[in-house]
Image (cartoon, rainbow, N blue to C red; front, side, top):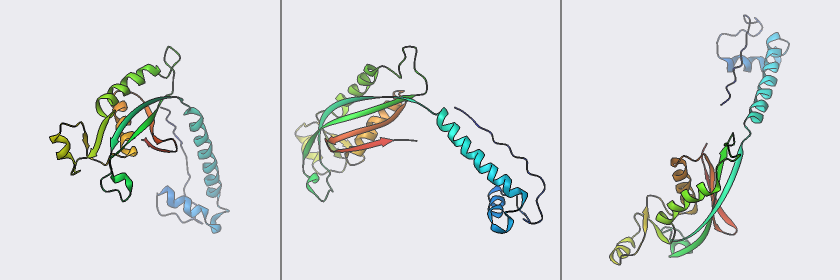
Length: 198
């Protein structure tokens, strides 16, 4: 992490500005007015703006990262019980999950991490939780019928959308210690959902 400290030294205020507050924002807003453009503090304001621009650009350059992406494939069934269209019906998907991992520095093997480490971790979770499973909202009325017939299903707190599944995979990998950037779940060849955090 890079920490930058910007220090200013402002002399006693100019009477033309009549500053009565220590608020930096108020000070600069006063300096920006047309009536005070000749004040020596307005020059300080312009210099500060340029300094902050340089600071931002430096931070961007120092924030360069290495990123790798691993794709995994699985199938699941679901329905969106309150959906107004055909997605409320029972159906399934063959999907692709693209998992991106990021690091500032490479390890001693010259890698962000081994692709097989991502694969082994995420596939173990998917095999147990998602693959060839039937995903439903916990309040779905067909759950009692599935239970009665010993059918496999997973009841979720949220509706089982691609957005929610990408979040589930992301959070599992994060808890497993991976520096996950994002998880993209391709529900079809032309439609995908992405989950990322700050």
